[in-house]
Amino acid sequence: MQLGIFSVGDVTPDPTTGRTPSEHERIMAAVTIAKKAEEIGLDVFATGEHHNPPFHPSSPTTLLGFIAAQTERIILSTATTLITTNDPVKIAEDYAVLQHLAEGRVDLMMGRGNTGPVYPWFGKDIRDGIGLAIENYALLRKLWREDVVNWEGKFRTPLQGFTLAPRPLDDVPPFVWHGSIRSPEIAEQAAYYGDGFFHNNIFWTMSHTKRMVNLYRRRFEHHGHGPADTAIVGLGGQFFMRKNSQDAINEFRPYFDVAPVYGYGPSLEEFMAETPLTVGSPQQVLERTLSFIGEVGHYQRQLFLLDHAGLPLKTVLEQLDLLGEILPDLRKGYAEGRPAHVPDAPTHASLVAARDAQAAEAGDAPAAASGGAGRHVDDVTGRSPYPESATDRTVELVEAPEGGVR
Amino acid sequence: MTSIVVVTAGTSVPSSSRMLGERLGEATAAALLASGVSAEVTHLELRTLAVDLAQHLATRVPGARLREAFDAVCAADGVIAVTPVFNGSYSGLFKLFFDALDEAAMAGRPVLLGATGGTGRHSLMIDHAMLPLFYYLKALVAPHPVFAATKDWGATGGKLDRRITTAAEEFAKVVLAAAPHKQGDDFEVTDFTDLLGG
Image (cartoon, rainbow over all chains, first blue to last red; front, side):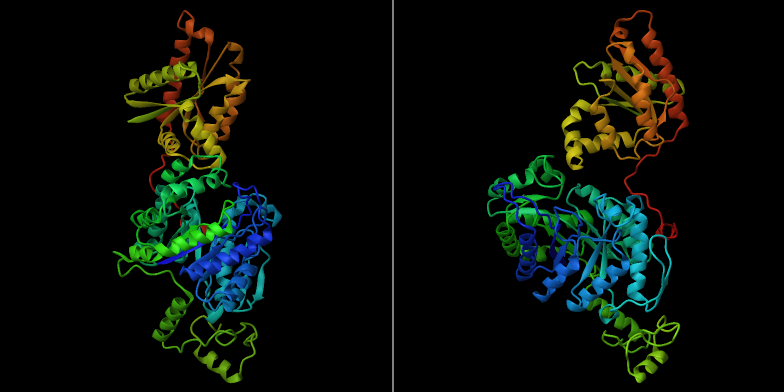
């Protein structure tokens, strides 16, 4: 079970002081928070992507690359990468570079984004949202998996003879999650590819989240990736905790009442009853979080939203300290009763191992470490786009697994 | 059992919109029964949901009461929608509800329109304001709406009764002919190969 945090990266005034942090402060705070997340033993740090104020993360790989340099263990991810308005070629490039720099500690969560004008700003039409998500992702997969891509689609300039540089680390693309709050098409997309499905689970009721996850699980099995309970599920969640639950409520309420998205709406109490938000003691947070298993079955990733709504950095770090204190119990709770056949979320290491095991079964030598070696041969010239020794290439030409040489 | 949901946007107690809604509901049930179909009529009085609707507008978070109301409409074989006339149009509360409903919820669903106002001079509001809204939502609008002015509630000769009966009979025909989409517990999904191909 992976536990982590995700952030939208909002620059919001602290309602209790009226002070708005600068973008610089918020960007540096994201780094501090990510490092702290690793320090307390979390598995994942994920950043949002936005292209308009009041949000700062318009360049997630720059932020994650900087964090990668200052961390050693934590997986760096997104919540979400805009598969609609970004060029899939640029996503393939950016995240391949990040994957190399972070030594494989990278995965991504695809999303469509929710700000209307972002589409026309990037030359797209919001009515094509689903179509863009489907076509762009299909291309992204090709770019990461095929040496030379010839491709033509509806939304982007065709590609003839395109080879992605750099290739993904160890020739294994980052694992991909698909995030959607309410679009069955996206759950279906995740199920079709056997990718992960993440439900943000913050603004809606658990019964809705459960329906979406069940759809994904059902379709995962339908598409032949294994039993429904082996599908890769991630959930969001949010909490605010203090040792004494009434202190948590008193301290969080002014932030909640005017928070972006749900502020000026239902009361804190109603929102806690309706959605997975938990404001209370560490014990309450622990129990509520573990209750998600009862709703969606044993799952693979739980991310919390902690850094938002104008909460000061100091408070966010205190929340992380408290999370660190209940982390052993959370892990124990997730392990309890977890069937042996329910897999963990794929990591770079597990994907490399799975690929090598598959190759060994097929009688091939494991692919060489990434950096140009391997089965990249131009289908027109028969040459590798990478400078390799002649012997290497000969060997590869003889022994390349299916799909390597055409 | 055929399910008829009456949505009324009156704000006073007693409200003439609610009164008209009740009459239309009873008349529809009677008309359906005459065709051998028994109906269950439920009432959604929007004033009881006013705060939930305002919160939903600000946050898009549907509260439990609101979800129950949405579910009732999505499971209905027919909807009777009645609003008072406010400043030449339907009331803001009435619009809030249909704005908050899932965009596809009314598509193909039979609707009987009703409105109430001070005098008969407001009766064309149904044609000028309500019809465009329900055409936009792709509802199956029954051909005979009912407008009740204050005076109608004390009129002799059963004129309002006759209008209600005619409207309900026409509406019942639409309800019996249509098979509106009923949202089940599971999402429907298009197979991905079709999505890819599309």
